[in-house]
Image (tube, rainbow, N blue to C red; front, side):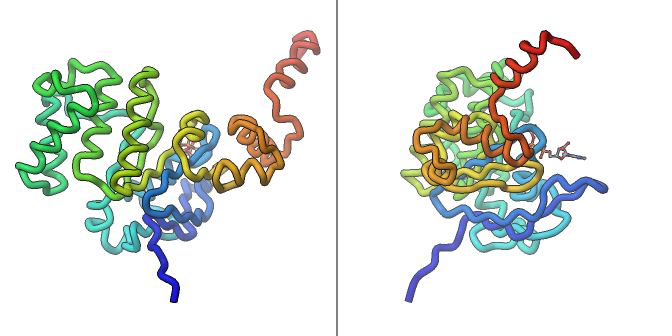
Length: 271
Ligand code: ATP
């Protein structure tokens, strides 16, 4: 008899319609526990819409989401208690100090006060914010706010972390810190990360598996190695693979922006 692992995230025929426009067409995905799974795609591909449905912030027009086997529609409190969501912009109550904000988040997850206090100390230090714990969030830089939001998401030790554009607005040091922490927590605790990103470097460095989304559909999915071999381009960087796949889907033969620029410039800029 084989034992089957329950996926951490499973979507079945997930669809979102805005009036007559379909932003996401029947998404069928499985992300296994401990995986770092990345959604890549050009602007408007449907990444944020999908993440918002997976986290229960947006009701799907059709289909369903299971979080570790639990239906998000039927038992939202259980499903949401296992996950944290980091949106693309850090929304924080600015009139709270960092510690007050983290305590507030711990309260939402029903954490015990003593456990919460221990975690807060640990996370402030991990995210280089220990000396700012008592300072008002309104005085924080964008990068500090972003690090605080990530700390708040990790506070309840989620099984699943869903992240929309994790590195936006972070300087290289902040971005490296966040990447290292995600990787370490996934390998130490088996946390699953589901992230959307425009940064091909982030996807290449962090993700075990990647889904490329275009016009509301997953057009390719697999490990970086399998995407490379599908395209018969063993040495290619993800950037080339991404450009080729999205150009194919648009029905373009050319994938190169340089070629496009050359065409425009050799045409003498005539229009
Ligand atoms: P980006 O990388 O630019 O953030 P994305 O891949 O996250 O893009 P979404 O934000 O999911 O894309 O948007 C997918 C499509 O759905 C876009 O064409 C967008 O204009 C449309 N859309 C999103 N939200 C709404 C809404 N509330 N009403 C109507 N259309 C919407």
